[in-house]
Picture (cartoon, one colour):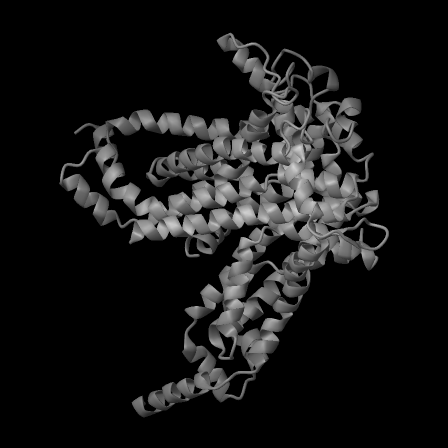
Length: 287
Length: 301
């Protein structure tokens, strides 16, 4: 047996795989090229952008595009996005964990009905509720506010679902021991259950944070003031069709802006990929 | 020892059969914002849809006017026709490519975890990123896509600026964005297939295609159905990338129901009419969800 055949055998592959593998890897790299082009364009001089010469690695590099981006209130938008995503995620995960725990471990009439309502609500597209919600928020004077950005994002059923699944398989002995010591339900939840629910907490947090960081329609509708916009909504005005900033600044500045916008979610994904993938497959496969 | 264990077990059972009123309190923290900000607006929307209402002023009862108006409005027809085209392009591409990519990554090739990261990465970024990157890639004159297409003798395609291509241009970006979810769901399902089944098929002399056709595919049927439904619903709700890439244009050729709802509410300040169109979309989505449940049950029986 040659070295190659041994290697193939060990990995349970055959000769056809020798053809499939390079094609697959090439497609995977191709799939990431839009990101490479985005970053590459963001470091180019405007004169090197709108041209027929394709330079994947810019021959001369400038940081001017990034400086130009910050002439817009990008920092403010970033802070808004961070406040919105962090607060919504915190409350959604904490309250979701409490509800998931109660639905899985506690016995009270209406428990199953509540869970069915939570699940059934997944069939309602959020888009149906945004217009009346906007109307209501405007009427009570909450448009363009942090509470308008945060409150509707708390009731994300995904969080309840993930924690309920987790607590269903939670060993009863741990609870029983604490119950014998006279611990009340809140004590039980915060001292025994929650500290052991690290994995679902991280999975729910990264996914819900990313969803909130990227959320678009609601922040677009509810922020009338430039200073209350979130980063995705503010940066969207760089598109040639909605705003006119790309016509003024060119694509290099727009690419710098979207590079800044994509860094947090891409970083989070790179470091916590396992939780993303686990959370998503757990959250949907077993519905 | 066993007696103690038994009594603990017994105690556990006893408490678990008691009604635990604290459960309501624990659920309430989530349930209150959920009902106030996620359920109430839907119910409120059913009322708003029967009124004429703008940001300023008070509601005026309109009866079914908003609905009859929607059926006569040519732009509603255009938007709903467009999502059929979006669905016809995006759903099959995402499903097939997602499955192919998952089959590839599921094999224990070298670098397959890198491939997994790259296939999923576009899904985690915002619509603004997707939209702007693809507006630039699909630029008619200087875009990368047209540059490379010219090597094959294809003239500059006006991807986002012509009524003929705008829908396709937005679809390409959407496929790149949405594929990651289908891919991860397929990958999880593939990893659930016990290795022994595949091994047994190999021993029986089944070739690659036969193993896929008779071992893997039947196992994946429920996931395929779920991916198709999820993707179909998310395509019916297409908005952000349309807003960023074409703003529905040119001449409404890439608009979608949500985009039209947005225009009606924000630009024309007709909240009642916007809510009525939203309800029509809701009904369509519900119908598709139930149809999928029904078909899946029929097949399972």
